[in-house]
Image 1 (tube, rainbow, N blue to C red):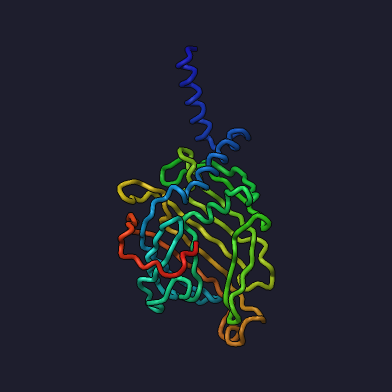
Image 2: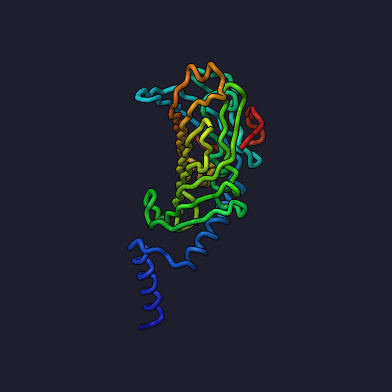
Length: 275
């Protein structure tokens, strides 16, 4: 067999192996995860300054009752590697900034969660699950787990006696593009939540897609969903205990209208640029 024929055979064999769904060897997995780690940690640094529109649809289920709460529209500005949010429209809370609208909100879809998974201090462990596709792109699906000792994942709530927060571990899955080691979808589920804490479960999923910013394509969040199970506790205010049952709070987010942010744009950052 000639050298060119041997090379063609090796390529065909590799493609067939990938299509079969067979797990890659330890060395190949190590190389792939290190390349993915580098891409994840560089993600925020490589993003341009941009503006987009975030639509957040909030709903709640209490027992058999489920209802839509409200729809909020935010202007998201990403500049200087920080996210800022300005409430543009809300059918109940217009005119208030992102961090004072009340109820369940979420932030950090622009790289924070991804960074928390792959930064060396997280001590995350990974397990190859399967080969798959995401919008026709070949991906490897990995499960991961970040222990509380290496986590920066914080749950917070305000039960009427001031905000309370705890640090938790988390786990989930990541769909990683074979071609460029970019995360196309990731999920997270909070671990080790103390029995007495008001939020008894919390999970998030984020989907990424290419968007044009200033004439160049960038992989950016297209939609996200967060679910939190809230259980009022005896330490909450009497009014909260009287009016609130255990409830599942759900936020569905869509990100649209990405465009380049210019220094002279008429943008009111609001807030303090928390990630």
